[in-house]
Length: 382
Image (tube, rainbow, N blue to C red):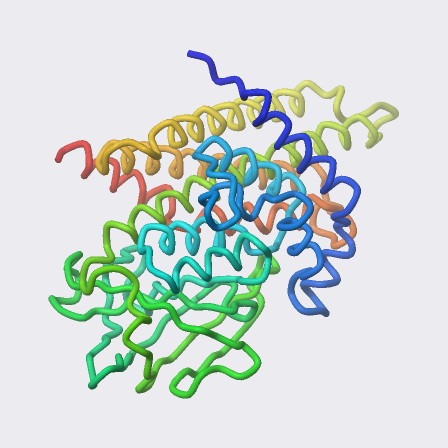
């Protein structure tokens, strides 16, 4: 089977790589996330207006390029290789995917703003007791005249402190864990001045991204804030989560490629007992093991990408297989890279420490290896 990229996809990859090599400085990025706004809005706009990658997978009628799963993989891997913190997955993959499937004039308008770099979305789905079960929704939405009233709480809403719009899951019918009865709402948002009925506690995560816990108390939304059919959001939400999981897995491949390359180069330079430590056979074996984990991760991502347009069970199995593989590889490669760098691996000055923190987060993002192994087994039995 041919896993090669087309000429257009290679051009997309090379364009992103060249842009990031010349315009995305790691030191400047770290300064922005630790003491600044948490991201670089000028870079985000350049992603849209110079590269066009914010519309890479969005429809042409909103300013996108109508790319598919392979284009998503190419973009995500390139962003991972440069340790980009800007909210591509939250906005383009999760937000863009759900808005496109919902349809309607409001969704269309936000999609156009995403493609132009003027909108950032955050997906408010995880609740204090839900774990990785995104259909476990206790937040409620009820009609009151021509409005909706939302009550509940969401935790670890990544990119909320940067967002112009929230996508909020709420239960409009059914029991807590039912997949039917989950609805999706679009909330216009200003982090500096949240709407009445929204309380936000923001913080920086261990991988230097911005997130927030949100509490909704009598939040009033207009009737057209409902995206899609009432109670019928789960198919769109579950597919968007699987697409985002695949994108994060592809991002991890980019991270691991960079970490492995830096580690090999470091062991060529670091001297011990009068010779490079890379000449020690035991360390060579360790780096071969890292390379093997990386190649397995690449193959797993290909599997998920090839099945993103498949039917539900086949797609879900492929995504879970990929995420379980990626979670294992991220831990193995990240931890070994830090160990082979010695004490330098934990300093702020070297890139490997920052990449390690992101890989550690990805290990748990959208489900751990254990979660996805169990999910794969359940899907296989079905």
